[in-house]
Image (cartoon, rainbow, N blue to C red; front, top):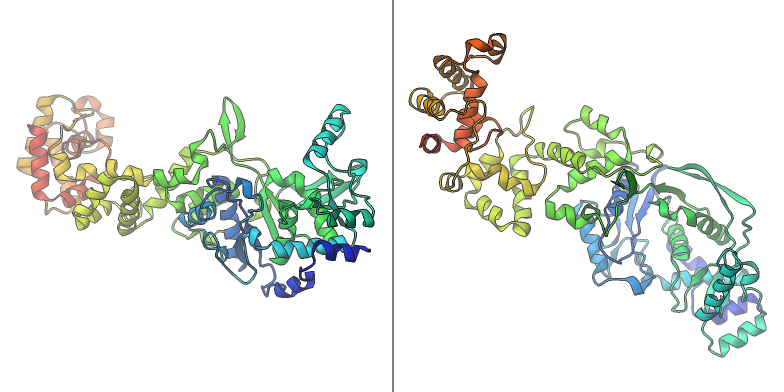
Amino acid sequence: MDYKELANLIFPDVKDREYYEEKYPERNLKDGAMVVRFAPSPTGFVHIGGIFTSVICSKLAKQTDGVFILRIEDTDQKREVENGVNGIIDALKKFKLEPDEGMIDEETSNGAYGPYKQSQRKEIYQAFAKRLIEEKKAYPCFCKQEDLDRMREKQESAKLRPGYYGAWATCRNLGLDEIEKRIKNNEDYIIRFRSEGNPERKIKHHDVIKGNIDFPENDQDIVIIKSDGLPTYHFAHAVDDYLMRTTHVIRGDEWLSSLPVHLELFKALGVKPPKYAHIAPIMKEENGAKRKLSKRKDPEAAVEFYAKEGIPSDAAKEYLLNIANSNFEQWRRQNKTASIDEFNLELNKMSVSGALFDMTKLLDISKSVISRYSKEEVYDYAYRWANEYDEDLKVLLEKDKEYSLKVLGIERGNEKPRKDISKWSDVKDNIEYMYDDRFLDSNVNYEYQNINDKAEIKTIITEYLNNYFDISDDKQTWFNKVKDLSEKLGYAREVKEYKQNPDGFKGHVGDVSTVIRISLTGRANTPDMYEIMQVLGKESVEKRLRKAIA
């Protein structure tokens, strides 16, 4: 028996490697187009780090007229959870990160380079493993788990590196006759890669993010095909990235230590490896130290957190781009209304150390993003969120949609739009006071500010209602009347006038207008008061002012 015959014995009905290379030819893309992939395992909820990777992949594919692939790496089927693939697909949809190719449900994929689920590509991996066996670059290993456990114990007691390498690779040098005999005796086996590496030598590599790095060569005879016929992650990713014509592997830097294995696999396969870009993890500060954002400790690590809070996907993506490239923030300041598609992301400008997750920053970005939405967009997003998470807000919004649109339209669409909503879960608290059936029937806590004498407050409101209020006034006329009222009652018409002579006045026009604002809304901080009054209408304004007087 020779090695070709051995390969045929192990994989008798597998197509030749060339069949798949012809089936998945080089892509017809322009120079510089990037083919990238998000390749998660369906083993639980999607981490925000996975969305971070997907944002980068999607952005690079779009800006280079390339391809963004969703590939599911499910070769470790013991860890797979029910509907895990659909969970990944739904998470990407929530963040508007729908791939160009890849899985579209648990079993179905879309694209010419599929299937995109590794468990459906078993024969492809076997074709490549078969060729490695023919070339004496891989071999069957008959070691049982207890053999490996004993070997590890010996290595640990001798303070040696653990693993299957060198003299410890006991099946590496089995004769062909013995291999044939054991296979025909139906002994269980796996397929191992025959490493030619030497850890005394270094490999030098340029990572697109990390820059120039070097590692000891790999000398481990890793498993490439398991006893169930499925590949390990290491082997599957090399075959897939070659056949899917991936140009850049963008992944977390926890995979950096696997790079020597992966580069050696590509060399053994006789193909050029893709470029690698290892992303630093998103970090959390705790007790003065940094740690990775944790699924177990940090609610914001889970994609579902953003859905429940109602943080718009547009805002989360802007925040993640801000982490990815520090110049994004300046670009946004200079391009306030531009689509993020116009921003040019650069991998080599990504930080080599992990950025700290900053919820305050995220919510500030979210306020700006929501401020750019039209009233119709705010209504639709808030209603969809409320439909799933807040029945009371849903009822409030749908009771009178046209009125709700007017409320949400206050200070929207102008040069300096309102920024009081950072997430959809803020909406109810920010608009509830605008609904008479909520406001007039409630026990409003009027927390007046600088003017807090009850008699003085009553005088201001009564005087305004009886002598100065006219719903048909334009904005300038309305404010001039508030100034007239202020002057009549002993307050400065202008704030600067009061500051120049504080002893000459009771206060200033801002104090008077605050009394009116709190009387109308129960709040000291609201969007533009004139616009609020226009939306409330004459009858509602009068009822509210009388309620405050009472």
